[in-house]
Length: 225
Image (cartoon, rainbow, N blue to C red):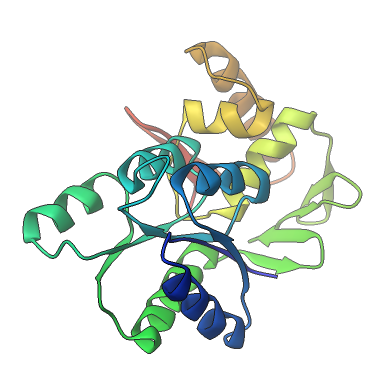
């Protein structure tokens, strides 16, 4: 089920959004404050976040920064602020889209659909399997293969590939990768990430010439197109 996190302190708006998205086949998680939203981001790893800006506990801008630091989900901002400067600032800070209140629920649902298709494009999810080109990860058996050849991966190597396949268009910093694969705060040890990426590449290269991990210089890594 595709989980959408709705972070909106207005109960009426939150419920209306949930109702229209459930009809579209999504599972919705409702949060009514920024701090509650952050808790669900950590626990549920939603596919997409709908984010109001004026929130109790933690502002929407602060929560957006936390979501981007973790690199877990695209964000559509919902706000009454309609100035061009506000929109540009939020998009530059990592929001994928921006919709001004009041809005039509049908338009919101359409924008959600666009983002869901973008973040899952190229990756097929079947049961507990992720596939991309000839690469397949099986969550049930914690195994990986390329073009039918088994890859023997460490836990962190598997989690790194899992992150890339879950979000095939996203560029991940070393901090993003470390947070996801190790579940700990990144302390700037470049060598750790570089060694694991190098090991994954070597294991894949032993069975295919296809490139699966691309270096984005000065930023980090992403799934090769």
